[in-house]
Amino acid sequence: MIAESLLRLRGFAWPILIGLVAGGAAVLFGGAGAFWGLLALALAVAMIAQFVSFQEPVLRPPEQDPDDPVALLPPLTRLLLERLPMPVMLLDEDERVLFVNHAMRDVLGPGLDRKRASSVLRNPEVLAAIAAAGRGETVDVPFTLPVPVERHFQAYAARISVQPAVSVLLLHDLTVVRKSERMRADFVANANHELRTPLAAVTGFIDTLRGHARDDAQAREQFLDIMAKETARMRRLIQDLLSLTRIEMNEHVKPESPVDLEGAVRQAVAGVSPLAAQDGITVSLDVAADLPRVAGEHDELVQLFQNLVHNAIKYGREGGEVRVSLMRVNPGRQDEMVAVAVRDDGEGIAAAAIPRLTERFYRVDVKRSRERGGTGLGLAIVKHIVNRHQGRLAIESKPGEGSTFTVFLPPAPDVEQAGEAAEKAEKPAPSASVTEML
Image 1 (cartoon, rainbow, N blue to C red):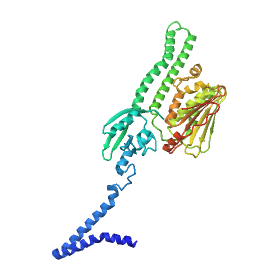
Image 2: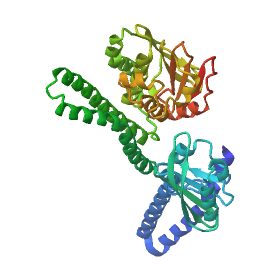
Image 3: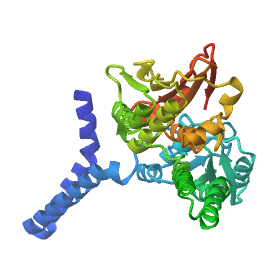
Image 4: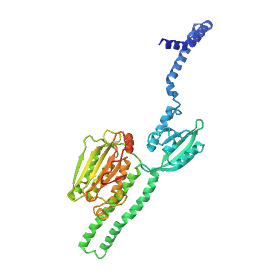
């Protein structure tokens, strides 16, 4: 302490000595007034210097470790880049990652610092653009990330510093634009294909009623009943197509609101209970204790479980039971998930059909599906909702033993951590039945 105090006094020695000489000269040549004026000026200068010294950490960045990958960025610049909604990556002359913002980590995942661009981006066109940027060129190329959910980007690469050499990679998300183009084409094609049959039937019955069946009361009632069913089928088909289009449009946007999964499942079961009652089917619900919330969209989760329970009712045994179970998988671990299993006691599904169940308009039993009001889009909707919620869908079935559809979802509230855990989670071990992971 004494040595430190002496060092501080030594640092003030020259200013004190200069002050004494200047004060003596002021008294000698200008009188006492000049001395007090000089003293006031010195105090003002000292106060300004002290203020600047106090503000130095704000006005100038502190000294940083040269091995720090973001040492080149002042705190304000780093904060600005971190909060940009556009994915940003800075690379050095060896194409190693110096900095990535939050938006880029959402696209490419965590743990990117100091890795080479070729180990985090496997697209040849983007890597060629980064190499060209290192040579001083400015390049932009389109590219697609196919997993975990297909996303489309326009990549812009340019050199922003020569010494030290630093390049920037910016990504412009074109997913919504590309999907809207594809969805419009798919919607027209699907609507044209699937609506053609019911429209032809309705048109044919109208022509019949206008012709020789005009005065046939029995035929009229029969045809009107068929026409009502066909138009209801067209309405359901259009609603499902619009719903699927909307879900696919937002599939790449991860929902972050905490949702009470038990409440969503109970609402879904209540919505399809009248259908179960018609066939004398009992829907039972088994909920584990201390079930955590999940990160998601409440309405989409309700739709997801309505589709699964409705399918179980349609293909279950008349007078049978549909069991819905909510449970925790790997509780307390980093890869914890919340699972909802929907099991029916119907005829089961052949192994060859399971991989195609989530395809649009695919039906195992076309006749039965249409008789029960199915559109062939229910499980396609389920698959895309599960994908958007960073979850997994497992399908287990054996002919004659019923089917079980299990949805695994990451828990809330830490959506980002749960999403990373979901990617690292181990897939459930396959049983004697056939299992498909989507």
